[in-house]
Amino acid sequence: MTVYIDPPTWAGHGRMWSHLVSDESYDELHTFAASIGCPPRAFERDHYDVPSNHYGAAVRAGAVAVDSRELVRRLTGAGLRQRKRWEGRAR
Image (cartoon, rainbow, N blue to C red):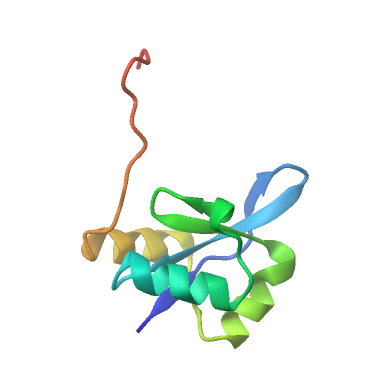
């Protein structure tokens, strides 16, 4: 079981955010996220958005800290990457 988290470098809603992913399964990800208090609404397609003030708790609970590129590489390699749909939008 491995869950990964990138540094809180993503700005939004007046805060900085990390992304939490699994390279095994969404079930593993949901279980881990619930264990550190992430609400279900923080899940987006293939990851949880984790506010910077919870980053340390995620790492202490066992999430492996990696940079954003490594996080995407692991997620894609596991076949769990879900890209945004651009249907109906001009590119």
